[in-house]
Picture 1: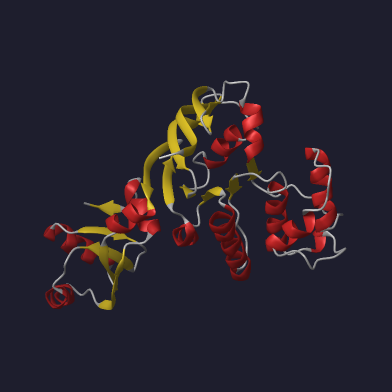
Picture 2: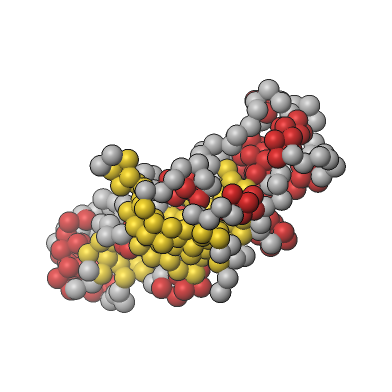
Length: 304
């Protein structure tokens, strides 16, 4: 398998704090790679290292086979487009003028491709409207357009749907899929909104405390995500005690909800709980969510 990005034992320290602590990852060419982790676990730091905005304390990475210590890495980085943290746009300029400015920065002599780029991100009808009057989703799509100005084949997006409304999320989702499927662009997406990542990613990397906990393809993940029974009860403590006594694997979702990863005799369980003054309010069979898989993987609120 060919990889766009490979990292090995990357470390980044700030004083006594390890933002990255020996992180190794592999992003396959042509993939949509979802980098999953809570806020503050090192996702943005990793992206900044890859983009050359910061230097690693230890470790190596390669882009298209070029090591980060090689002089060629500067040229290779031109194959990357990135939106890190927030889009870098000029609020007093229109979408077209923002792109013209980026073309000048990159030394692109002709503006002839700008109309197609605006159409690609759905901003072809914004005219002279200034970016400060754009919705958050429009600004995000303009940021992606700017990142695409140099015709990259590797796009890095840091929390691209953070704060967007449902329509904005759908527009970004459709754009990412189009870039990947129709333009052969490999996409690395950092996000903590796991439900959305589960809809588009072909590969996942689960990161916690600056380390890669697991890398897995979407196909492998679908196989591993187990069937579960979601129970809503009136007394969580009683239910947990009963499940623990029976040796069942479960994950507490809230003070009322729990996912049980076992084949249950529902009738017997309901009767047993009723005797202990615990009422079952709702029962639902479903697949384990990506969010629960991640929580269980990093050792969240789970009993085994």
